[in-house]
Length: 112
Length: 114
Image 1 (cartoon, chains in turn green, yellow):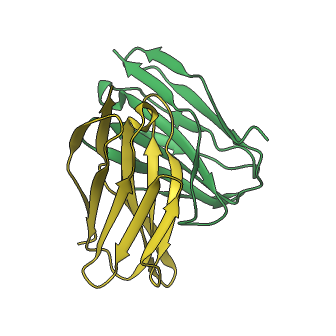
Image 2 (image 1 turned 30 degrees about the vertical axis):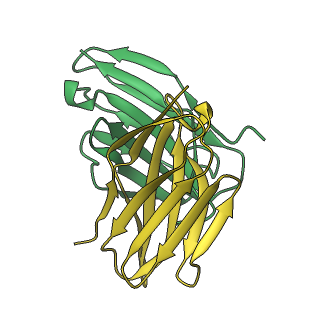
């Protein structure tokens, strides 16, 4: 099993550009989530999904969109990148809400 | 307000020494508490889970304790190794009917020096 995979590993964007961070898991987990991690802020939940076709907002959803068309994939879209979105982004999956989270390797995003 | 606070914020110890990391929470109703280890540049990995009825649980050189009355947990690392250098994050599960979420602490950054 590959677990949770994320691409790309690094990305530099200019302000106003858009992009999609990819996340996939092969553990048949229903619950998937996106976090951002900033120094001194810890992990903050952006969006999450409890199953295919169902998504909901976390604590910092502004500027991000998600969709869940399959159990395996949970892409995160940045619509109009801003310097405040410079961060490390982690995708995670688990059997259920609050279960052990399996994290991907992260995407380090810089917006200039 | 549901919060998880960890101390110390950072810690430096010598290889072979023991250390204890603290996690205090105000989350209610409490469901469980997990400790994660996050190596630099990687995603967190679960070390152990503590439920309401558990006081102590060990995973190799890692021993977690939970006092549900005082809402405190600790993670004790015995005979530290250089590979223990990482951030250790405490996470508490909040469970009130259909409202279930994870409350994350900010982590303790541990450096083990030779």
